[in-house]
Amino acid sequence: MPRVLKKRGLKRGVPPGSLIHIGDQKTDKQKITVLTYNIESFNEQEVESVEDCFKPNTNNTVTWINVDGLHKIDTIEKIGNNFHIHPLVLEDILNTDQRPKIDEFNDYVFCVLKMIFLDTNHEIQFEQVSLLIGPTFIISFQERVGDVFDVIRDRIRTSKGRIRKMGSDYLAYSLIDAIIDNYFSILETISEKVEELEQKVITEPTPDILQQIYLLKREMIYLRKSVWPLREVINTLLRYESKIFKKTTMIYLRDLYDHTIQVIDTIETYRDMISGMLDIYMSSVSNKMNEVMKVLTIFAAIFIPLTFVAGIYGMNFHYMPELLIPWAYPVVLFGMLLIGIILLLYFKHKKWI
Image (cartoon, rainbow, N blue to C red; front, top):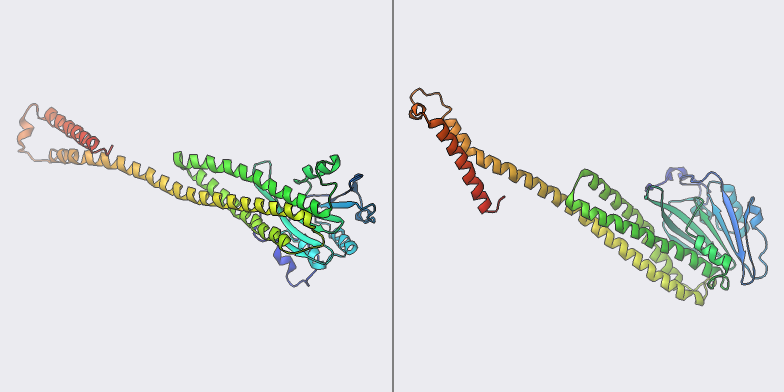
């Protein structure tokens, strides 16, 4: 589970635009891949040096540069110098604690998103993805190797759909759409967890169940924090006219906005259900305690008159008439047993047991 603030103290007193990596290093080796395509051709390669990415764009191709690993600051700085990226944008790329946002510049659009996936323990992990969207290029920055964009790469390689016929704006839409579609997969997993916990919280409200509820609630808080600003990002692209995003792409962005609203509504629903599970847990524990107290109360109510009888005949008086009767002891025992049976029948008649 990510921390709320990641090493913010490193930037204390540092001038704006200073390039400092804020966050955890999630990969040992930085990986840079370049994918260039148009309707007729396609080329994909992994480059050793960042300078190999700075080739001139020819034949009306779209170039997608993907950088896995943000710990090499000089690589980010060289990319910024070559594509004339503002230093504050490079600073935001290296700060992995950014909320989803979008900034428009004259020659490019900067977008920050949160990619979510499940680790080997089926726990939700968050990763920041930064996109620099230009007229003929897209540069994506990720914290680690591995993402949800394999389906986009396959469509480009096999020329399926219209992605090879469209520009960088459609590629940007496809990347954002892949991230949002992955949200639905994560929500399906959360739905299974919620249903399982709902069943357990009623049948066996143990402290372990309570801990699972709190962990799931915390995951939903971070998930909401990552998804809720995404609506503003898509809405900004729809409101403002940009020379990068063409009108033919706007209809896809509107569909993307609908998906975002659906994800947000689902998250809010699950948050309410998890909050309700906490109330159900407390009610279940309280009911279980009431059942225990009811059983103890019934036993106490039965033994009160029996204790009274035993207390009378436990007094050490010499002249007690019943002590001289031969059958007094079994009669008293039978009477005490009869009193217990009568009380049990009375409680059952009242439906207290």
